[in-house]
Length: 315
Ligand SMILES: [Zn+2]
Image (tube, rainbow, N blue to C red; front, side):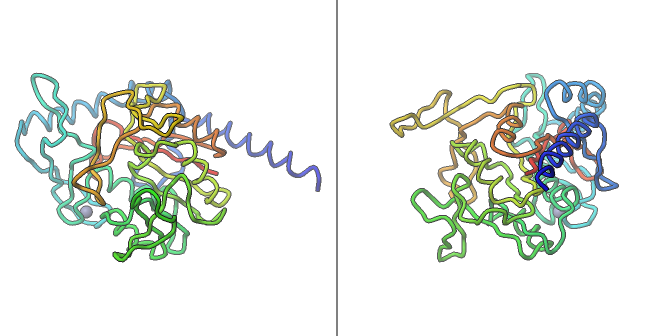
């Protein structure tokens, strides 16, 4: 028996080498939505060189046909299992000088579930790619959102939370029924969950390494943290926008930016990081056995915006 752990360790390494060899190729995925494993910036650039041009041409044509006015793109909402007209406008649009390109990631809003392209894809991948079933133990770092509602309909036992403020006991529930959790000090016991879902939250967490370590701790072995983040697709490294110094004072290394916060819409929430590809290294250093980007694109589902990226870190 004493020889077993090293043997298992070898198998684990071998499995990851195999995974590396398959990088960029469609991996085991739901039949209809192809998900590509991309493990570093070079592989991502290669993917875009091979498959990015068609996406760009298609999206430019859509924008050119509908300059500066709201329009609809027909497609299938996976969440509602219905064909709908996804609403696109020029909120958060990218300005190229002579024209603007819609922010496909944050628009393409379904008229039924009200979820944008990113949110629909996150729910889609969380269920199909992670192969989660009704009995899976799932934690999601949000509770007041359409994504939580959509996932709860499929996974009734899902646990959701919001960050309600500093100094609140992790795991406590307020009068409105909202659970407070801080991803750098979760209230859950070790090895509780099959999956953790965190969508556009980590950029607001100053201690990202601690957050990864905590997520790893409360996942069961083989469990996966699936997360989305605002991502600098062409940057090898993460840029720190803001941080707390040794004296606990907030320091801004770059002009502060705030994102929408469903719990606190009036103020928004500060962005601490602009993430780059070293996010995968941070996840491995925090204890995850495997960390990869997952890229997907499917106009039939209204998943546009080049090749959008999610991340998966498996304990
Ligand atoms: Zn929908």
